[in-house]
Image (tube, rainbow, N blue to C red; front, side, top):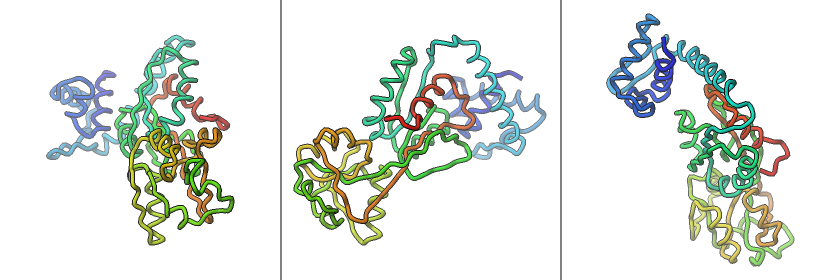
Length: 297
């Protein structure tokens, strides 16, 4: 039994496809089939059921998957232990949503780079569900996202922090001078610029308004949080954004928070990785930095 056969088995099991595993690993599909058959001969069991285009693990395959994952984690740990114990020189692939990427990641990754200048970091931005699917396929190491609290037995969650979602506008907006809490009707009477509908907090707002029989029609939708912030500063409309995205602009006096009466919406910043993923030192250092309890990141 060879390590490459075990690695091929795990990839085929995760992707539920011999052809996708071959593409991911740089093999031909025939090579993947040969490796899986060799593994089955040595184990004396049938690991996969292949019916039509469906490839699924048999019961014996599911049992072996747990052992195979442990073997590869131990191998990765052994390799990691033999590496330079001081300087990190590996790679790190992070998945996140656009608002976190533009608001939190610049400072976070600046500090990470200062501590570990030789690590090559790549970032993928997308919706939480797509990022989590890529993580499950081992295409992303860690996902840092904003959504309702989500749990899955396949994941390890290392951070879960509540985050308020707020109405924000220019400091020169007509409502900015109002000291009393504003009614939702007052706020919604002004033009809105919002994130796209697949943003988790936009979805939460739409669901709340729908429960009240209200439909909001923004005059502008964009996935670019930086654009929304700059647009607001020109006294153009109101937006609904996580507190961390507007914090600096509010402190600088460029934006203000509109206090809506009896209206509170909260979501959660979360960091997860796949439970079968060996946590490299590059991953461990990022997780330690990003999940500090009193971190400004």
